[in-house]
Image (cartoon, rainbow, N blue to C red; front, side, top):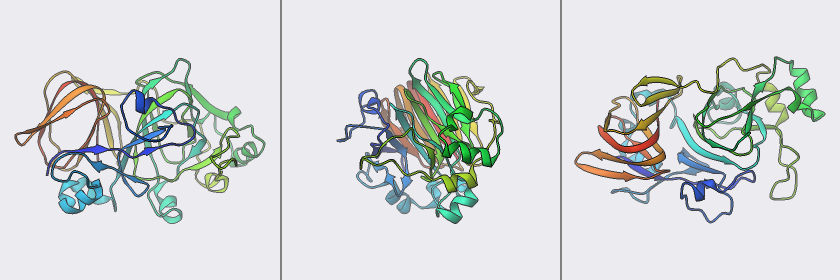
Length: 315
């Protein structure tokens, strides 16, 4: 087994921009590059391996060859690959939406629910996002405000800065605002319920579908209970923990030296947000530039060096 350099599937959702092409060099024949799925085994978009003996295979195909040992024993609690990691470039605001929890999603959608973490990679001056409600409201008021287009009046709008962190549990109403580029670490799910979409029309010229009935069943009609913003916790020199829960752990490495990484019980994801780095393993090496995404199998000892900012995630 060896570190897999991954090619992300690209998504051209109508609200997206072009920074993933211009700033990170991702290739797509689409005009819009709204999302890059940097670590994905999801049926809606899988990574292609760019290096080594398995070059050209999907990550799923490689994991089938390697078996459960590549994922580590921590992933054994999940019935399929546990996380999905994305870059999201919001030129326009995303819809106001909510994700279901595991119980609801497994029974209704046939996949896990979606708890996620956002790390603000970059943003325009004055950018804001929606995170929960200003104060607790009733389900009845939530439904009424969806129907009479006054929902935004009770949403909690938060100004954002580069480096801010938001941990969004399933059931939390949210929306990424215009001018924000985020890295998102989430459960491996694509279940999203829109409740407000700013009157936008889809590619077919019709309003995009809303999912109000489902959203009413899963939304927590409350103000945020979890701190947000500059909440990262420095755990060692150059390493800041952004979020940790039973679903995943996400950290930022401010790399300016050599660092050993070894996880006997979990695979790791390394994504270069800024700069350049080199991974050395088993007498070989892998050069990484901005935007590079690497899957490291569980139990593989690597050494990473260079000058870079790296998003480091595992289960």
